[in-house]
Length: 137
Image (cartoon, rainbow, N blue to C red):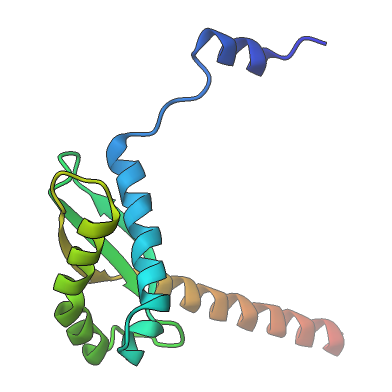
């Protein structure tokens, strides 16, 4: 049976190669996540979740977005702990990743996670109101 996707991929048009900056950003996200889980002694950083990493095309600077589970706002203590740990994280990345230059790291609180939690709360309220309306009628 003829599959158009196989034909397109055999010509080289199907899958697009990901940019190097995207691959490096994914590697940085995974490495920082593992670092926070295994090697960091600060308990405030153990609860931090790295949501995404964006890096410039020349790989000189990276913005690391993080969220704190169960918290609606970026905690000042966690932000201060991340700023203190930036040098440690950067030196770990330099040892682990095979890059000519290690990017400058900037940690940014991810407000999207907070908005998602708010939307989920609103959906739960709507669902409970619907159930209540259905049971009343």
